[in-house]
Length: 223
Image (cartoon, rainbow, N blue to C red; front, top):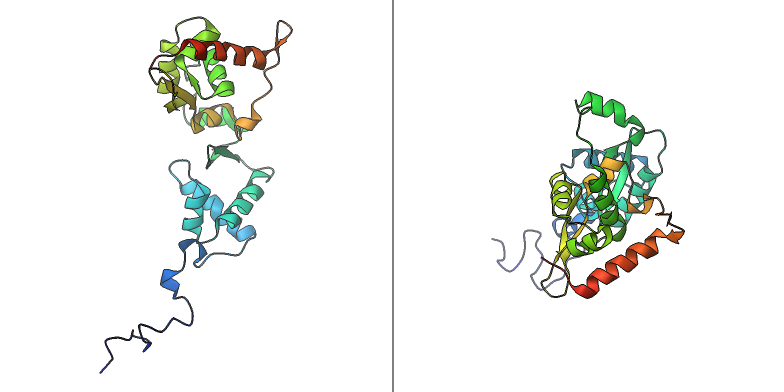
């Protein structure tokens, strides 16, 4: 008859295990592939299967490897040439998107050739959000000089911007930022791929933008 104070392996409860059992190993260290092309292919498969943008940690759990190995595989995928997709990063998440050079064919395949284009005011507001984010409605209106409720609703409805927090000031106004769909829409790998703002009337546009936003911050915002 077995001793109730020993486990099925015959070891005393007070006796430390010789090795850590597989079932209590950290999940990211179980049954994973070694770094290399096969792990990169696995990460690619997981990204294709992911219904929404995912994180390196989630990929590590799914692949059964360490997060560092996932990051190495993601770097390899980012630098791959001649593929029909690109790897996009946004606020700690990653996703695969179709390569911008095939946008026309993809839109035709999906029946999106007649998709409504963004208006000039909407593009202007979106550019301000993209370059200055997070930004409040009051800050956006300080830069554009007009009411922005309509364009914000349009951009939010298209999934290009989303609330990302609230400003720690009177009224705690909502702060907006871009979404992974924004990257997909414009074929960017990350926000680092945004082109420089350039000059407006001989002055650095980024400086003008910061000055306008700062002025709005001094006067407060709305929720």
